[in-house]
Length: 115
DNA sequence: TTTATGACTTTAA
DNA sequence: ATTAAAGCCATAA
Image 1 (cartoon, chains in turn cyan, red, purple):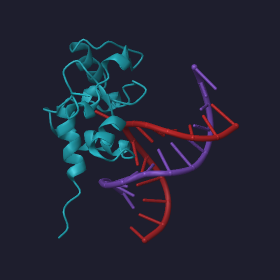
Image 2 (tube, rainbow, N blue to C red):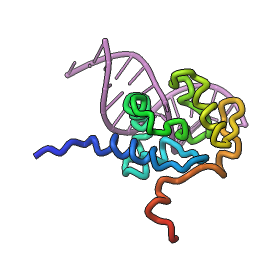
Image 3 (cartoon, rainbow, N blue to C red):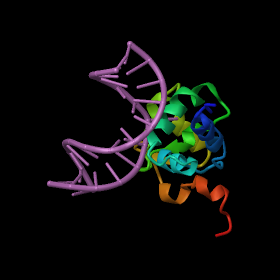
């Protein structure tokens, strides 16, 4: 039988929901954590198409590996992404997350808390 | 089916 | 550091 490969999309949504408050992660990190390191674009696709209808998914905590709010333009009000981040204490300047490297949350950390 | 597009990432110059 | 091009996977037309 043919199992649906939508596991990827479901995982993206579930994992995105796991991003801690006040932290951010990247498309590539999520894709990698799921098992498809080259599907970073699909993560973006998932957020723009599936997460858009789900308000329980903090899609604003997902940015690109440069720490830039690449999806800012896709929020209902484009400035909402930065607004939501600001509410969590994340400072954004010039569409870039300040102290990004420090706020970065690796999805892989879920299952490997003890080194 | 083929072409174009995209909330990406990496490599090369 | 900045710019350009290739690789990637799925969707929309």
